[in-house]
Image (cartoon, rainbow, N blue to C red; front, top):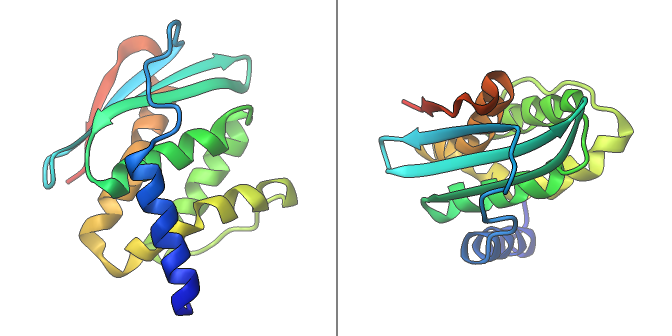
Length: 156
């Protein structure tokens, strides 16, 4: 990665960390889950409004490092309006990219969304920071699986 691209990615992460998008509780969520990373103290609550098989709205609240906040902010931007199946594909692809895992084929319609998440893939070089970047996604997944139960997940 060249220096200009690295700097652009860093600027995107810092912007989303300082000015997160969709940072609020949804008024009428259908699904909620909390995530906590005890290693660094990140805490994220993800709120979903699911209509059928589509994510009608998504937001988050919490406190954490710039990476977890930026990851949650970018995640909410790409998930709005997606089907649950597409959202799970995006999570799998994102997780593979930040952990160095095996990439799976994605529908062309999701390629732009994966590119929007690319600024976070630099955490791959810092294994402890991978947990920060994936915490919002794990809370999202827990929310889908638990509904309004409001499960808390911990990364260790």
